[in-house]
Length: 383
Image (tube, rainbow, N blue to C red; front, side):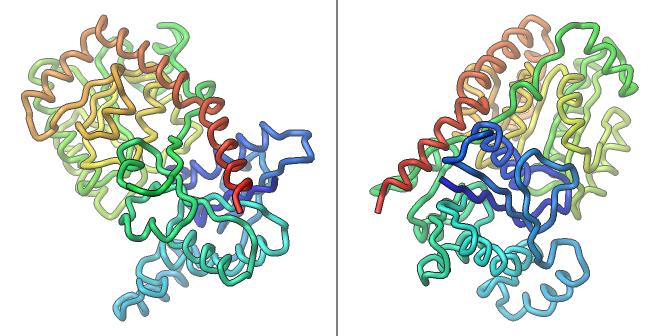
């Protein structure tokens, strides 16, 4: 069995699709270390900034954020460029990477190509149907694509029961994202947490709420989070909110709102290596994104024993289970009540313990990797 895990990115902060691809390739490489019957390679548009312990093959493309990509996208997108792969910088990146990936798949004897980049997956699927390579394409759906588009793929992985249920009459694999529960772990003692807080310039005693996600108003609704936090401060004036995420075109607006608050700190483009420490300094975690296909940040917080407050929707409710509090974030009273609950040390300890247990039992690398390997075996067993 030879697997290609593919991601067009890696030129920017390792989150989302890029983190999924890197983590999966590393986990499979570790699982199959020393074995001849199974191999994995990470094919990407640019090498990860931090080397990973899996075979990594960097392939040419027009990367997001470069002048060449921007020029091509600006020239073609106004003329229906999205129809043929140039509607956005992300789509252009995928389109220009596809030929090199097809050539690598054809010459490398790969059995399966597994990826979350939707347009690239479709280009690889079309190339397979034309006989340009033989690898079976599995799209792990993490980008909120229409059901009609997903119907183009024979092999589809959904990340939650809610999204899997949309595909009536066809088989899909329901396998969630996973979290490294060794990397993301609770502070082993009050002393460790206090020491970490000092190193971050934080009070050892004050209540610290955190959030992780692209720093934007749309979708992630960081502006709403800050407003709800300010309302909560009437109950706990010394509370502090930390927000970590990738910079976007909307970040400056969030930073201005944070500056007006005086109790909100924004950390842009924090390296993934620092994220476990970020979670360990928190007392609670909150994110009120409109919708989440999965939301791996909840897994990371839960694995670190941090109680979560989230926007109520089927996916976050399933992820959190009895380890978090899901609310209608438009209801200020409901959010305030939830934050008061997680500010109570006994409630926080109970929810944090449940979250850690849930992360280990349902979303750990070992548990999910078993399901992924079984999926590969089933795909290869079918004609």
